[in-house]
Structures are given as C-alpha cells and as structure tokens.
Image 1 (cartoon, rainbow, N blue to C red):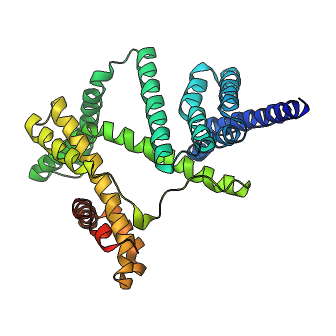
Image 2: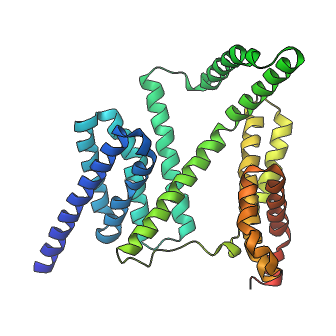
Length: 318
C-alpha cells in the first residue's frame, strides 16, 4: 500500500512538472515566433516521457491540464490548437513507447494524429471564420495571380511576360493540387522530428530501449507502392486536370515517388558493401537528390528497381 502511494505521489509530482514545462514551452512558442517551430516541437517531449514512465492515463491528465492553463493564459482557440497538434502527439508517442511499438508503427500513429489534428483545426477555423474550404484553393489562386499580374510586368515584357505568367499560373496550380500530399508529408516529418528528439533526450535521461528504425541500408518500403503508383498514374491521366480523380491520382503519385526515393536512399547506403568508393559521396548525392531533378530521378529509379527486383535481398544486405 505504501509503495502504491509513493508511486502515485511520484506520478503527481512528475505530472505537475511536465504540465508546467509544456505550458512554458507554449508561452515561448506563442510569444517568440522566431523560436516557435523548435519550442512547439519540444512540447510532446515531457508528455511522452510521462506516458512512458507512468502510463497513458497520466499523459492524458497532463494534456487536459495544459489545455486548461493555456486557455486561461492564451485563450481557448490557441489552447485547443496547441493541445490538438502537440500535446496529443505526446500522448500517442508515450503510449507507443510504453508498449514497445515498432518505430515504423509509432511514426504512422504519430503522423495520423498530427494530420487529424491539422484537419480538425482547419475545419474549426473555417467554421469560425465562415470560410468555404472547398473554394479556398480557387480564392488563393486568384489572389496570387493578381499579385503576379502586378509584379511580373516590372521584370518582363512581350512574349517573355506572357510566358512568365503562364509558368507562374502552372506552378501555383500544381502547388494547390498537391496540398493533400503536402499536409501528409508535413505530418510525417513533424512526427519523425518529434520521435528523433524524444529518442535523443530519453537516452540522456537513461531510457535507451526505445525501438529504433532499421539501419538506412536495410530500409524496405512496401512493394505495394508500385501498384499504388500505377493506379495513381491511371487516375491522373484518366481523370485529367481539375477533377477530383485526377487530383487524387496526382497526390498518390507524389507520395509513391517519395517512397521510391527513400528506397533509393537505402540502396545508396547499401552500395559501399559492393563498391566502397561510393561511401564518401553518399551524403552529397542525397543533398543533390533533394534539390536537383537529375539526382532525384537517379534515387527514384534506384528505389523503384530495387523494390521491383529485390536487388539487395538477392545479394544479401551485408
């Protein structure tokens, strides 16, 4: 009985400290925009640690406490945004770490949590501000086109102006079409960054049994991505531009290209086992693969071919 009471008292103390830390980070993030990205990314850390040590129940209690205190200090809208996006991610990560869920499944769960919170925030904001979310893209495109029509004539004229306006309109259209893909990618990247920070900080606190991702050279993406990619291409060209089928296919192909690119990075990290001369230039190829289309396509096709023919598996990872 005494041990249970001591355990509950320890949990209460830790919960209070984690709540205070999360509220302080919320304050820093809201009042110092230059550091907001970093500070908001740290909010899941204390909540995930408490969930790992004391259980999901306590991390949920802390999230509720953060919601109440943030509502008092910053208002209900800001508090709901912080808790939905960042505190709830801490709850999910803490639960996954407590039950030793694999890193890949933890990333999937965290990404879904962040994406769901983002969609919920967007819907609530549209409802509060009476915005038609189904026509936001058209409004943004018209506004950007108006700005371009006012700005581009200062730098171009004649045929070059018409070409620049056409290229700008095409670029903006593609950006708006890719918004679903961008939202998913942002959610995955944020969840991955939070997991990276948690793993590093937990190791400093003596927690070293957090499930990790496999080594880069052993990255294996699901082969079903090939069939999804083919389906996306068929939807993209069958539906055409401006239809929901075409836009869905466009976003599917973008997602699959990222999957193939990551598989290509795995191939690149494996290659030194066969050709050691590749080792010194791997990071350079990856960096150029982020910004240069030629290197992007090299990694894309390397991943696609490896996924289709199991090149690394047939020759062994080592």
